[in-house]
Length: 218
Image (cartoon, rainbow, N blue to C red; front, top):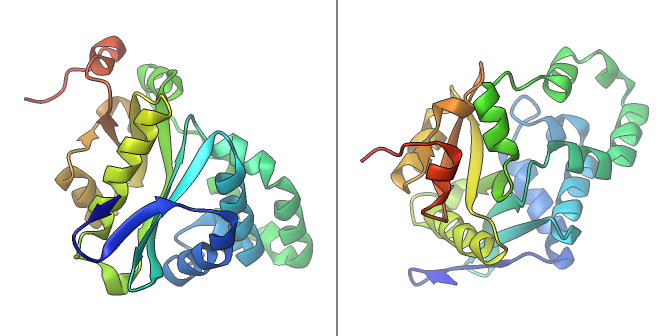
């Protein structure tokens, strides 16, 4: 799949593992993302699981012969699945860096409860509701269509896998990401909102919103 003259999007393989890990580490800081707080080995473990798991996939965007963006999708809620798959690396991270045991933010993020409405809980777990695990673009390649190419390809791939919608959670303070998803047609969904996170949904099946009891804006 392509968009424009210089961007191509494809499924990631294990051969891409080092490059996608490096891209992640170049963009996110420990305060931004829990896996980075746990270290490069843990970040790599999360991507290894997403590439290998039959329940998830990673798409990479390439330009100028290198990976400049990526998006991860799980066919269902992914947090517990990913954590259990990477549990060994999680324990190893703590053993190698015992100061993590005293990082309050680590435990707050790891064990925080969504606190969304009961309707939101049902929606998030509903069969056919896929979830975006990550999306990021190299800072040097923003504004040239990489993000739209990635999310458009994700829609096609997830629909082919049988998903009926994809949701993504974004911190409320991250206004640039929120605007980016609105711009490509994702719908802010108050039923899924938590104290610090707002969720956007793109529907791949026109009948799905009605089934969920959601009225889409005109």
